[in-house]
Length: 277
Image (cartoon, rainbow, N blue to C red; front, top):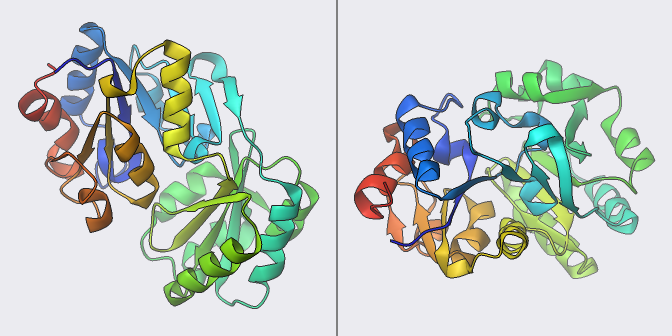
């Protein structure tokens, strides 16, 4: 297939269950780039939380981060496109969330992730049994009071997340915020998290910017993903590929389904489904 951009979600897609990039996947990506294909990161992570082993793969020059809120050239962390949450949206999310228990927040500012000290010390205090404790401690900068920190920095947030101990309140939170503002993009990469950014964000938005920036038609883009925050990107790309471990909503939108992230599904698709390498 004639492909010029490969857009890669990381967690649950390009990385294995331990958050590592396998040699097989790395080799496949490098072969694709040797064949003239641009490989870009498309992640919900903040820039500073991107794995060094991915950033150091020769040829990966661009990163769509924070669900499209910030797009960088990976060399020297050069920001080429950014959105910020509106301060009024931040106030609304914080105010609305006061009535819920067993939740906490994270926020991203200029590519750096911040979280509450108590949560970083013990991520399970809100019932978070899905996300990696080691990952949280390694990638989050701790603050004494995350609500106060977010409020004090509300005009400078790339995005913010709610970590949910009680997953049954997800729908209520989404419906309430959506009914009170149209300025927020809401998505999720995990059942225990809701992610909020400016209305024009999303991985599809980031991928559209990058395709325009590089002068490449969307029909020449392949996107890989596994979760809700990948759906818009999968639909935007000329070819959307879901991992075997992806949720059903994403699989229903994909053109192809490859092997799981623990089976080097990205490399398998590039070789055996798309025949790019």
